[in-house]
Each structure stands twice: as structure tokens, then as C-alpha cells.
Length: 223
Image (cartoon, rainbow, N blue to C red):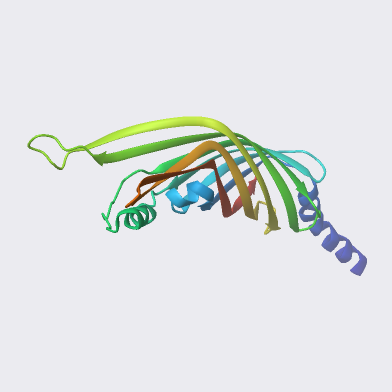
């Protein structure tokens, strides 16, 4: 009788064990922050957003998926006001409304280092980056000095990301996914610093490709 109970006890763990090994379709949902770097980091503050991922069933330590994300960045007025103050000696207290949105569309490849319930991994992302800047700026009119004008500009460029993370199994249906990623965008960000002195006016220009460090966490649901 004890042998039968032992056999039944072992069988109760078979679905849980093999559920971790047999590949399945999955859906990943996460949220996080994007810390812009370089010139992009000067002009924009930390972005907030997330992504949705469809996971394809492939046996072995590899995983292939496709993702769509969305991150929104606010314009860094503090930095611009600081530049004005350094150049002119006065702070104009500008409050410009020039938000930036980044929509990455990527194909992803992961490699899991261990087939356990806690699985560290490395990941590569390749795809497109859709960037949109919407600027609302003062545009005074006769009789209406508070009039504003809104313009919008979009650009699609390549997207390359490389990341590391860990997936923690919490059951048969879902896992927790924690990820850090460095993303390189095809869009360029530039700024110009103007210095006024007794000898004249000096212009300094800086330009670099956009990039950010993304930190995210979310759920991966097994379908």
C-alpha cells in the first residue's frame, strides 16, 4: 500500500516537471523605465512604458519571440534652462512641451543558461524603432499673445538591443520575467550650445544616435 501511495505522489509532480520542459506558446506583458543616454539623455528625462511579447514554442535552451513596445519621454526643461543661464547669465524658466514616444517593433532571440525554475538568460533584439516628437510651442498672434502651435514629426529607423535577465517559475501557468536591456536607436539627437562673450558668439554642436538602458519586470503567461 505504501508503494502505491509513493507512486501516486511521484505522478502528481510529473505535469509540473514536464510542463517546464515542453515548449508552449506564451504571452509576455511587462512594464518598466527607459533611462536615455548621451545627447538623448540630456534632452529627455526617464521614459515610462512597457511591451507585449508573443513567444514561439521551440525546444531546447533557445527561445524566439516578437515584441511591440511603447515608451514615453518628457522634455528636459531643467537642462535647457541651465544652458541658457550658462550662456546668458539669466534663467528664462522655459517650460516647453516636446514629448517623445518610442515604439520598438522587434524579433527576439533568447538563450537560457540553466533549465531550472530560476533561469538566467541573454537576449538579442533586432527590429524597427518608430519615434514621434510632438511639440507645442508659443506662437503669439495679434490680439492673442498666448496662442500656441502644435507640430508633429515621425521617423522610423533600425533598433538593436542586447539584454540579460532571469525568469522565475511561479507555477504551471505563469512565470516572472525581470530584464535589463541596452537599446541603440537609429534616430539622431543633437543639441547646440551658444556662448556669448566679449569676443563674440561661439557655437558648439553635439550629435549622437539615441540610446537607452531599459529596466523592466512582468509576467509570462503559458498558453
